[in-house]
Image (cartoon, rainbow, N blue to C red; front, side, top):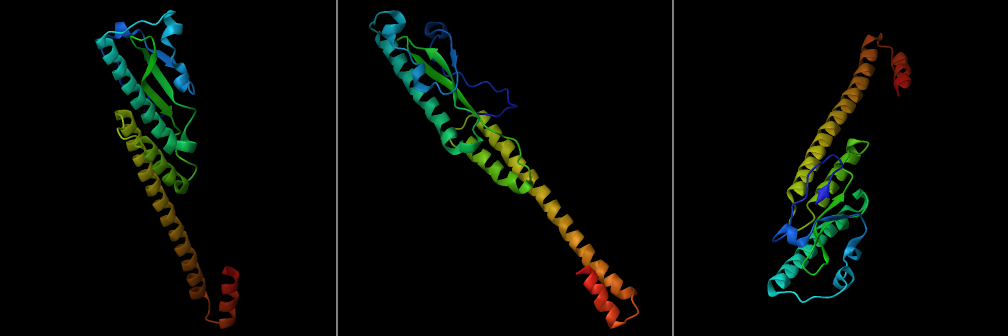
Length: 198
């Protein structure tokens, strides 16, 4: 999930089964990645046999973990210079006492650039980053929509600037012709006045 600085969206809860059974979620800082998993033997001091139901839950948690990590990795791969730090994952403990990522987010810079010309490609990059995963979350789609609006506003601003530049250029050329019209028709004066404006 893409997290813009101004957003307060909470990630979907992918936990399965009874949350009490899996323990509380643990929020892990960026860059911790796979090292946040703890081994069953070190966490409990002994390894225990899991029931078939618990084994199924572990498999589901592993699948969710892979999906969450792939989702955030897609944002990172496309985001590049927009990314602020690494991914942040929320974890839950499985019946095997291992931690599994059940949600994640990547913070990116969603602010406009200095000029409309720079904002347009940046907004396109933000949108591509937000929609990079195969299954964008509602927050990802929201960030993509914000980026599309930012791009549209930058295009409007750019068009207005170009209209103003064209109007100013037209006004300058009109001023030259007015000076010529006000003269007495003397070609020496016309040439001299043209040199003044050139």
